[in-house]
Length: 544
Image (cartoon, rainbow, N blue to C red; front, side, top):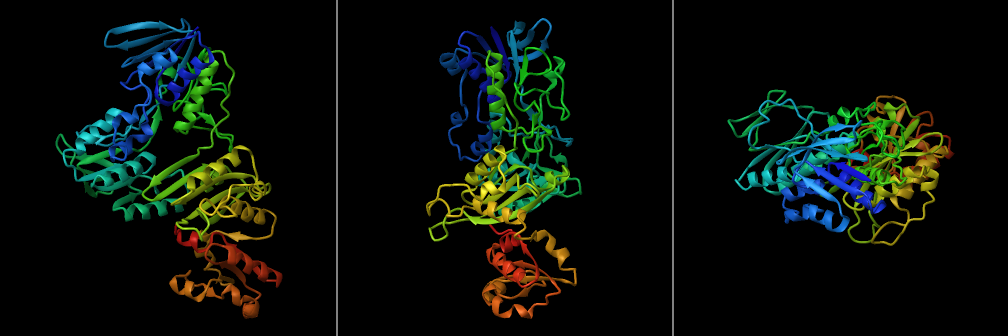
């Protein structure tokens, strides 16, 4: 059996090595058009910033190691230009010329490439993507010339990581994002928190505006925004997204799906016999929505490649789908998400609610406990967990991974409130934020507590029959409170509740929601109409 793999890095490398582990007798050849068959592309911004000092640390597996450890023939600087699915051959081109290579099974893992933005002057020296090792090499060389200013076009993962690392190198940095918010795969309030962190780092952020032109002679010296403003820029990073390199698969007759990604089944088989595909070029099933999506992430690319490699070599594995679980470091903050966010659930027409869960990374009486804010998306009738988002300075990775596992396992919030998670003061609270999230959401689903979101308060304040009730202490009130709110501390509530008009609707908040929860239960028992403002002042002020 002869198995050919087109493309290296995450999907292609995983496919080739899994094929070998599945079938020791197969001949396996991997073709990579670049100079590096396996490198840590997610580490490139950190190499640019000097966090990763040794460039060789980015080079994960060399062609020599592929050969000695796996007996895989890797041919770098070799481009596949055509596929003949009838004759079962591919056309390859390198410095020695062009040739044909036969295959029994073929795996296409051509990955993606940066979006080509319609920006005048993008060919100038000083304008770069952060996509390959040579990209990073060129940027580092440019930085060594003493660059002072940089503009990063795009406020996603690579854009924000690049901005942070360029700032660490001493440059004045501005992030320009065409969309209304940065990190568009999270809900808007998380964008506000991240922008505040970036501002504290000395990084400017401009949203809702694009770049139309890069100015300068042969070398970039600035950018022009579509609102007419100009920004100085010795260095311009284009990081507005990635599109799948599907052209080769299309030429071979592989069907594209509804997202314009290559259609594959759970075995990673394309519509063409004996051709598999994996990585950024394919579309996947979203495990919550059931819809086809394209989410180019290294984790799913590796798993897809593994499945394709195993099956091409005679195995029988399946790739079930994706949740879009992702995580990002910005300064001292970590932001993460999985499943459906508020906007996505609304667009799908799901019957759901979102709830905030303020918490801490570990027991607050133990040193260095850090605040965090979770946001759960929950199906109303069943309590099924649909999605989660989290932001904070410590312990976010652990919580999002637990929540992603819960979503994968079709768990409800009633399961979450009963999870048996590890607890010791340095690591968590006895009621971990994930468990607390289950309790809060379960209380809502069971009808024990009604909630409103902080975003609703401005509209609520316009209602003459509504009262926003602050049940914190006088000291907390004096430090800041919601405009138009009324103060009645929870510890005085039992003696003073008759001061409240029973004909009004009360929206109750405290610091994180716990005191408001107790206040609401008491007032509810006395016949008052009450709602707990989800997340309290932590969510209102977005303070983490």
